[in-house]
Image (cartoon, rainbow, N blue to C red; front, side, top):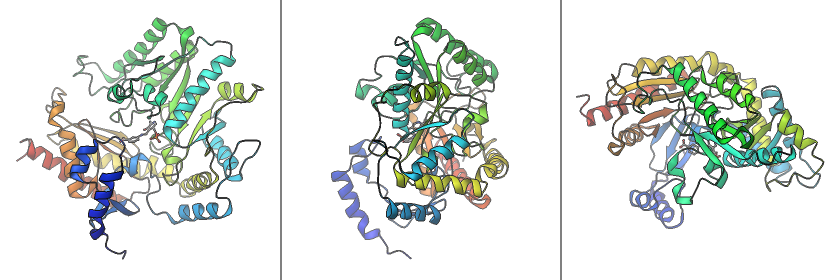
Length: 464
Ligand code: PXG
């Protein structure tokens, strides 16, 4: 047993409050409450410094595909640190793990995406994508093609450009964003369509309507000025919103028609989440560029990648000039070695097939069985090891609670008390567990989720 850490908790909290600014946090409120300190983790379980055990329904931040404490990944990292702790890819050098990872990704990615640019986070991969899109159009002699389209409710990260690309409006005012040249189009969120005044439109019709909104915007801006359309196959941090079946085929055709580069952000949907290696396969999308991060290394190392298809990749490879871009840690050999081992384990253990045909369907069946008829739950949606549970005021007419009631936050707090990490996005409860989760662990997770949602329903007087 590890030594008890309870006695250190107060010290850590005080030091944290004094010295540590947390991402996406209200510092004063957090310091008042005191942080939860996670000290170790194994498999799908987290342990905090008070001795509590939590089942991690979010795989960290949608990233720990192989679960925590994987010995093989730890050893791959140790060996890589020992043998070549660092070297860079600048100035005509490369390192073996970096080359091998680029080649491995090219073999796993949808056909044509076979050139890889490395970075260290999803935000950087997207930032890089936007730079390369601009560079591509400059190389083509079409410098007027500079507008980047993306969707409302999208989350693409936090650099100046990635935040500009993001469509969650709360991400903008503090930083005077978006930058010029970033435009948003609406997204096909069927469950929210009624509250948005679209009446009883079917999901398929909404998919077409929202694709047409994209087309209208491209035409209004002028196709000669529109450089790219960026989107997640499924909105992740925007509320786990799944596209109607009609949406992506139409969007794909529109991008081709107007010569708009399609940039797919697979930071969440990549590496098995939806039961395929990539969401592109799940939805039949053929992007020109694809961003990856998170599950690429199961979160064990900070690494991201941008894959380029023949248009952008070919243009850069034949530009006959220096591409003036790259990070100190682009293609870090240790991160690449860990990512390679991560992909090797996923392949060897058939984890993607497992999500597609075993644990994924089990998880989807169970989450629907537990919640479909719950009085507080308007909709359960999901695929693979992703699920969203919408908590609503009125199921019959898809009416949401007023946001100031903070129903999702209440539920999330109950989850922590029951020993579960489940994310609340507005009042949508979201699950994205590690791909290695077992059936009994799924049952345990959903049992705790039910306790938390029942308790939320009792707080609201929906259940007695
Ligand atoms: N694209 C997508 C689709 C993401 O989900 C990023 C880009 C940015 O990646 P980095 O590595 O720069 O964070 C993300 C990240 C949440 C949450 O609470 C989601 C993310 C990050 C932090 C929190 O859902 N997604």
